[in-house]
Image (cartoon, rainbow, N blue to C red; front, side):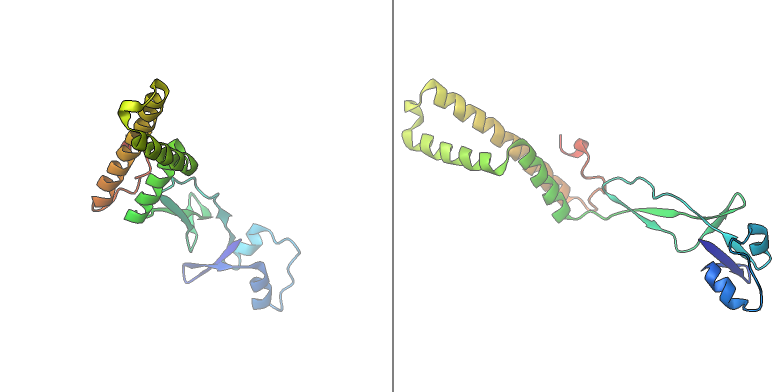
Amino acid sequence: MHLKLTNGQPEIYTIGQLRRDNPNTSFPKNIPDERLAEYDVYPVTVLDRPTTETWQRATRNDLPTLVDGVWTLGWAVVDIPATAEMVKTEAGRRIVAICPEWKQRNLTAQAAQLAKKGQANWTPEEQAAWDAGEALWNQIAAIRAKSDLLEAMDPIPVDYTLDTYWT
Protein backbone atom coordinates (compact mmCIF):
# COMPACT_ATOMS: atom_id res chain seq x y z
CA MET A 1 0.00 0.00 0.00
CA HIS A 2 1.16 3.51 -0.79
CA LEU A 3 0.06 7.08 -0.27
CA LYS A 4 0.58 10.30 -2.11
CA LEU A 5 1.00 13.65 -0.43
CA THR A 6 -0.99 16.34 -2.17
CA ASN A 7 -0.56 19.78 -0.65
CA GLY A 8 0.67 18.03 2.51
CA GLN A 9 -2.44 15.85 2.77
CA PRO A 10 -2.04 12.06 2.52
CA GLU A 11 -4.33 10.05 0.26
CA ILE A 12 -4.27 6.35 -0.53
CA TYR A 13 -2.48 5.87 -3.81
CA THR A 14 -1.37 2.95 -5.94
CA ILE A 15 1.61 2.35 -8.18
CA GLY A 16 -0.89 1.88 -11.01
CA GLN A 17 -2.16 5.41 -10.40
CA LEU A 18 1.42 6.71 -10.43
CA ARG A 19 2.01 5.08 -13.83
CA ARG A 20 -1.28 6.45 -15.23
CA ASP A 21 -0.59 9.94 -13.84
CA ASN A 22 2.86 9.92 -15.48
CA PRO A 23 2.39 8.21 -18.88
CA ASN A 24 5.59 9.64 -20.35
CA THR A 25 7.77 8.32 -17.55
CA SER A 26 9.34 4.87 -17.67
CA PHE A 27 9.32 3.23 -14.25
CA PRO A 28 11.04 -0.06 -13.39
CA LYS A 29 8.86 -2.99 -12.35
CA ASN A 30 9.80 -2.47 -8.68
CA ILE A 31 10.18 1.23 -8.02
CA PRO A 32 12.62 2.06 -5.20
CA ASP A 33 11.23 4.12 -2.32
CA GLU A 34 13.68 6.94 -3.10
CA ARG A 35 12.27 7.23 -6.63
CA LEU A 36 8.70 7.14 -5.33
CA ALA A 37 9.51 9.99 -2.95
CA GLU A 38 10.38 12.16 -5.98
CA TYR A 39 6.66 11.96 -6.82
CA ASP A 40 5.54 12.44 -3.19
CA VAL A 41 4.54 8.76 -3.06
CA TYR A 42 5.48 6.76 0.04
CA PRO A 43 5.02 3.18 1.21
CA VAL A 44 2.52 2.57 4.00
CA THR A 45 2.98 0.04 6.78
CA VAL A 46 -0.34 -1.56 7.64
CA LEU A 47 -0.48 -2.57 11.29
CA ASP A 48 -1.95 -5.90 12.35
CA ARG A 49 -5.51 -5.82 13.66
CA PRO A 50 -5.33 -5.30 17.43
CA THR A 51 -6.75 -7.79 19.90
CA THR A 52 -10.05 -6.57 21.30
CA GLU A 53 -12.32 -7.52 24.15
CA THR A 54 -15.79 -8.89 23.46
CA TRP A 55 -17.26 -5.42 24.04
CA GLN A 56 -14.94 -3.67 21.58
CA ARG A 57 -14.65 -3.28 17.82
CA ALA A 58 -11.53 -2.51 15.82
CA THR A 59 -11.89 -0.42 12.67
CA ARG A 60 -9.04 0.46 10.37
CA ASN A 61 -8.26 4.15 10.16
CA ASP A 62 -9.14 5.86 6.88
CA LEU A 63 -5.75 7.48 6.36
CA PRO A 64 -2.19 6.70 7.38
CA THR A 65 -0.31 8.83 9.87
CA LEU A 66 3.39 9.53 10.09
CA VAL A 67 4.82 7.60 13.05
CA ASP A 68 8.57 7.88 13.69
CA GLY A 69 9.18 8.72 10.02
CA VAL A 70 7.08 5.82 8.69
CA TRP A 71 3.63 6.22 7.17
CA THR A 72 1.45 3.84 9.14
CA LEU A 73 -2.14 2.74 8.74
CA GLY A 74 -3.44 1.76 12.14
CA TRP A 75 -6.63 0.89 13.89
CA ALA A 76 -9.14 2.54 16.19
CA VAL A 77 -10.58 0.44 19.00
CA VAL A 78 -13.98 1.59 20.21
CA ASP A 79 -16.34 0.23 22.82
CA ILE A 80 -19.60 -1.26 21.54
CA PRO A 81 -22.48 0.28 23.51
CA ALA A 82 -24.19 -2.43 25.54
CA THR A 83 -27.95 -2.96 25.37
CA ALA A 84 -30.43 -4.76 27.61
CA GLU A 85 -30.85 -7.36 24.86
CA MET A 86 -27.11 -8.06 24.93
CA VAL A 87 -27.24 -8.51 28.71
CA LYS A 88 -30.19 -10.92 28.37
CA THR A 89 -28.25 -12.92 25.79
CA GLU A 90 -25.28 -13.14 28.16
CA ALA A 91 -27.58 -14.26 30.99
CA GLY A 92 -29.03 -16.94 28.73
CA ARG A 93 -25.54 -18.12 27.79
CA ARG A 94 -24.56 -18.40 31.45
CA ILE A 95 -27.77 -20.23 32.39
CA VAL A 96 -27.43 -22.80 29.61
CA ALA A 97 -23.76 -23.30 30.56
CA ILE A 98 -24.76 -24.51 34.05
CA CYS A 99 -28.06 -26.15 33.09
CA PRO A 100 -28.72 -27.01 29.43
CA GLU A 101 -32.29 -26.63 28.19
CA TRP A 102 -32.90 -30.40 28.07
CA LYS A 103 -31.92 -30.59 31.73
CA GLN A 104 -34.21 -27.67 32.60
CA ARG A 105 -37.12 -29.51 30.95
CA ASN A 106 -36.29 -32.72 32.84
CA LEU A 107 -36.08 -30.84 36.15
CA THR A 108 -39.44 -29.17 35.49
CA ALA A 109 -41.06 -32.53 34.69
CA GLN A 110 -39.48 -34.13 37.75
CA ALA A 111 -40.69 -31.27 39.98
CA ALA A 112 -44.23 -31.67 38.63
CA GLN A 113 -44.20 -35.41 39.37
CA LEU A 114 -42.82 -34.91 42.87
CA ALA A 115 -45.33 -32.14 43.61
CA LYS A 116 -48.15 -34.45 42.55
CA LYS A 117 -46.80 -37.22 44.80
CA GLY A 118 -46.52 -34.86 47.76
CA GLN A 119 -43.35 -34.16 49.72
CA ALA A 120 -44.47 -36.32 52.64
CA ASN A 121 -44.37 -39.35 50.29
CA TRP A 122 -40.91 -38.78 48.80
CA THR A 123 -38.16 -41.34 49.12
CA PRO A 124 -34.72 -40.15 50.31
CA GLU A 125 -33.55 -40.38 46.65
CA GLU A 126 -36.45 -38.19 45.51
CA GLN A 127 -35.67 -35.64 48.25
CA ALA A 128 -32.01 -35.58 47.13
CA ALA A 129 -33.11 -35.10 43.49
CA TRP A 130 -35.42 -32.25 44.55
CA ASP A 131 -32.63 -30.59 46.56
CA ALA A 132 -30.20 -30.86 43.61
CA GLY A 133 -32.76 -29.36 41.24
CA GLU A 134 -33.55 -26.57 43.66
CA ALA A 135 -29.84 -25.73 43.96
CA LEU A 136 -29.65 -25.40 40.16
CA TRP A 137 -32.77 -23.22 40.04
CA ASN A 138 -31.24 -21.00 42.75
CA GLN A 139 -28.13 -20.52 40.58
CA ILE A 140 -30.35 -19.62 37.62
CA ALA A 141 -32.37 -17.20 39.75
CA ALA A 142 -29.13 -15.50 40.85
CA ILE A 143 -28.08 -15.05 37.20
CA ARG A 144 -31.48 -13.61 36.34
CA ALA A 145 -31.25 -11.19 39.28
CA LYS A 146 -27.80 -10.00 38.14
CA SER A 147 -29.17 -9.61 34.61
CA ASP A 148 -32.03 -7.45 35.92
CA LEU A 149 -29.54 -5.20 37.75
CA LEU A 150 -27.35 -4.80 34.68
CA GLU A 151 -30.30 -4.12 32.39
CA ALA A 152 -31.45 -1.32 34.72
CA MET A 153 -28.07 0.48 34.61
CA ASP A 154 -27.75 3.62 32.52
CA PRO A 155 -25.43 3.27 30.81
CA ILE A 156 -24.94 -0.48 30.87
CA PRO A 157 -21.21 -1.17 31.37
CA VAL A 158 -19.52 -2.08 28.10
CA ASP A 159 -17.68 -4.90 29.87
CA TYR A 160 -20.92 -6.47 31.18
CA THR A 161 -19.68 -9.96 30.19
CA LEU A 162 -17.02 -9.94 32.91
CA ASP A 163 -17.63 -12.42 35.73
CA THR A 164 -17.42 -9.63 38.31
CA TYR A 165 -20.89 -8.46 37.26
CA TRP A 166 -22.37 -11.94 37.54
CA THR A 167 -20.93 -13.31 40.79
